[in-house]
Length: 439
Image: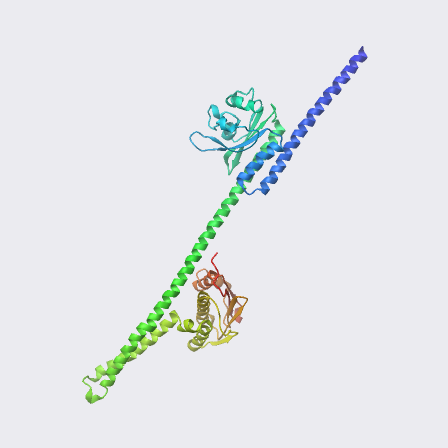
């Protein structure tokens, strides 16, 4: 009899150990499924670039990989009723979300796990839907779909509860400490993923706004530059043609008047008045000379009539004549086929550079070269002066340098200035022969 009792006790212990081992194995299996879901979701966070797609993938992973019956995500609306708006779900839903009408206000409909999780910013568990009094409003709908327990996890983005991740299981007490900890970590990772996507989207929007603004600025600058050149050309022509003609006629009239009364015995005017006529003729000659110089400075006629090569040669000759700097021209092609805007930009950059050399470089020689290759023009101006310094290059108030760089950039070109100390300065400009479209 004693032996039977001992044997029964042994069998009972073995049975209890077996049951305990099976419970442990089941618990480990459950934890392993949730851990796999956590890993899968982290991979989704890395892959997904869209917030909605990430939320869809999270709900799918929780159901398909985590083994739960249903998962949905609600947004905490900041309206008077504090509505929880369902936006994403996966699993056995069957119209459940159309009927629950959940809020996160501290009212009867806000005392379920979803409302509590949003208000407290902490996980909320309904261990048994059939007995939990706070779940009474939704019990019938949940029971019809086989939901037995629920876990709600707040989604905290940028320090604020954005919404809630809700998970429903088919068995009571499905969310023990380990399961809740793993799913809480999943919700935290999801929150970080949402924040990263939103931050990236904000940066992309800001970058796009910057690009649009910069494009508008460049279009405005290019149009303004064109209008300036058109106005300079108009004024130059008026100075050269209309004012020049009027001054020439005036001089001829004055000269005729002087010649008519040059012989003293025929002159009805005294010597003082005659001298005034001579002075007026000289003044008129000076005004004609100055108006021509102004017209040439505004827009050299030679540039429009004979092109860029002739314009560069005129610049070099004029520089040598008025400054004493020896100007050498190398490697100029016979002619250049390029857009008018490109020709004007290269001439203006060359003109500005030569002017800067005369004013600041303390140079005795300069060399200008222009080559054309593969649809691009390369203009190089080199002097033997003191050499531009890094501080001068970095000076944001140097409008001359900024203006040259902007002229080149607006047409898809580039400008490089290299100071070499006592060996002088080299300015290199690369421009497409055809005007580039502003991006």
